Image 1 (cartoon, rainbow, N blue to C red):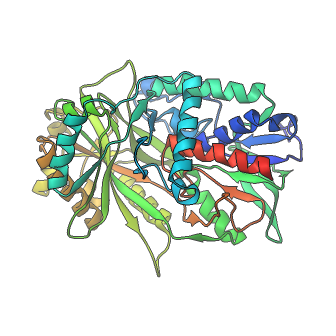
Image 2 (image 1 turned 90 degrees about the vertical axis):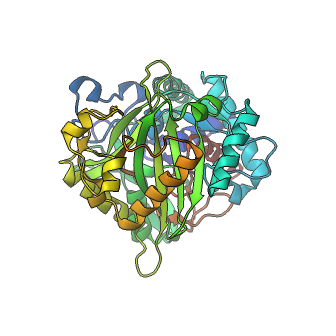
Image 3 (image 1 turned 30 degrees about the vertical axis):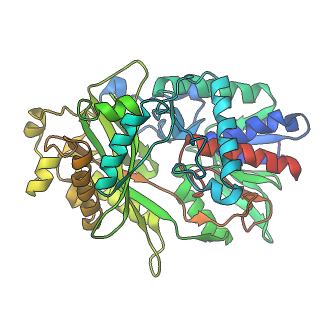
Length: 483
């Protein structure tokens, strides 16, 4: 098959996905010396880090890169285009607030050990040595106390900020390290299907990204799925086709919220990112802030079938005067409906139709007045949107009533914590959705119900962030070394 001539037909380990979990699996296999004894292959549908770039900076609009969006696909996954925050655990805590559920399988102390080990790897490859949130504890406590009085929990986690542009450099070094140490990586290659016979993993069927006319089988009895959130829908399909045990998962639906740095100045100064969580009436759904970007930029990202979602970036050197953050409501679905991914896709499709393929933006004041936002109103707004391609409109046509009630109730509560948080000129961009596959049922060694098939990282519902995904990869390598 053209472009695959150097790839063997049989490997000891196949890793599907070169995001943080997959890349760190390969890295730790090298540390354990398995790269000299075993044949290891990573399959990644996107490009090398050095070949990933978003044309929007030059074109002024999203051109829907083919066959896959460079922001969401490629070595290091969406991590290379995120603002690159490593959310670390507090050393003295006996629990882990954010990042996923790895601790439920390995215990808190083991998970913390792995997260700090992964952090050391990031430092080795050039991460900033500064950690936010370890100082000004009295000031942070004041913010936390105000939040608690209004039914909001502040999770103060230490943050190491890489920066979007620095993430490229760092992950590029990791990519090169893997290639120099006998790890085969297939770029721009899809795993079309898994080969499973009698409930045993046997290999994968691959095709070059964007070219479905030719396929190739590659065999291995150890397959690690590290597919990230972008692969959640594919993973759900694999579970149905091959009877891989899973349970109904969660979909996080919300908006990217943009407001002036001045409003968020104390949170930005003392913590860099404040992780606020509320379970407010009437529904009691979990609503949280996520991925706060001081002096950052709102951005769009494209998923399969040209599905455009919103996200946010923060650079080390390039700054705006606005802070952006996600406000997400978590929704669980049970009998008879158990397809959270399809539900989220439907909302995103509705938003895209309203914006003619672009992200929608609306002023908070207009939502509260029950009216849409017009472009001429946006041009006079005191908060200037940093995503220039966003279309002024009405996001409430796309986002469901319950979710909007959750979001607006959370903003109202946060106004009492951070004055100005509910200013009418603040902007809501839609939709921001975090897709997680129906959660794979795994044991403490990440084994699925199919012998020889493992699941780690964000896509299978184990982790929710760079550092814990990376930590799951480290532990995955140690499990493989013992097999």
